[in-house]
Amino acid sequence: MNNKTAILIFANSAKFEAIQKPFQSSEILFDVLNTRIIEIAKQTGLPYFLSSEKNQTGATFGERFTNAIQSIYDKGFESVITIGNDTPHLETNHILKAVNQLQKNDIVLGPSKDGGFYLMGLKASHFNTETFSKLPWQTSRLHRSISRLVVAKRSTLSYLETLSDIDILSDVKTIIDSFRYLSKHIKQLLQHYISVEKKIYKTSTHLIHLLPSNFYFNKGSPSLF
Image: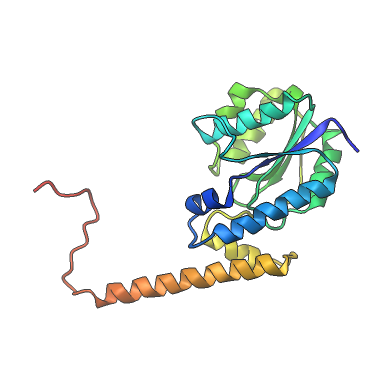
């Protein structure tokens, strides 16, 4: 097995994810997803390291992600494959494909449908902390920015298949409706959260209809007068 490559699981705790993600009571879901992603990493046979809000350093997402990757290189590894916890269709074979592609390429990306990526394989020789931390992380421009950077640096880039990650409720429906395999437990949890959100929406709509027709909604800043 490749002993120069390590996996970085960049994923916050389920409790923290439940605060960040716009789902009701999603802590159970992310607890299952965190357990699953660690098991997937173990199945590769590669060394893996977990970076969560408990040990990340940096003021921005870009800084925290960059520092986490650099910490793996500091351990002596020559390549890092980063993954998160919010892509239910990510499997062990995606990581192993990335390992193989890194033997011929400098960077490997597993693109997400939202313009980001669910996996990134990167050689230390093509990692620059200053450039990396300034990329437009957590935006739809990320994929394009990395592609332009690859061209500018004359690096070689290869892709894995495109998958969906979980950022908003519509992502959950897309994942469920996909023909790809999902474990029964994860599928049930995803269906549960869609059901909960629908109930909340219906309740909110009902309450609005009960308000007097002349009820005033302040859509701007609080009035000073």
